Length: 111
Image (tube, rainbow, N blue to C red; front, top):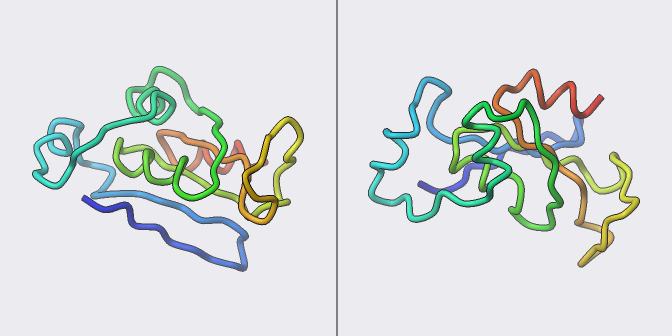
């Protein structure tokens, strides 16, 4: 199941999701195209171990694992969120993103 990314330049964020929020992990795991359920942060958010996690994203490190694990990932446009303490691959792309179980939690994380 490929990662579907939606982008809205007016809101300065990219959001990735998969299937629908009513799906279960068992349904996702049974998909033949699904080869990876990776990234502990996205898994923790999907399993309700925590409300939100934070990660760094250059090209899919937040949004794709979120989509693969039934959580919501947000990649803010570079510069919208502080890049302090991030060792970037490229300053024009790297940013801090959040992975949460609910869209509401992502909004809270963005502030």
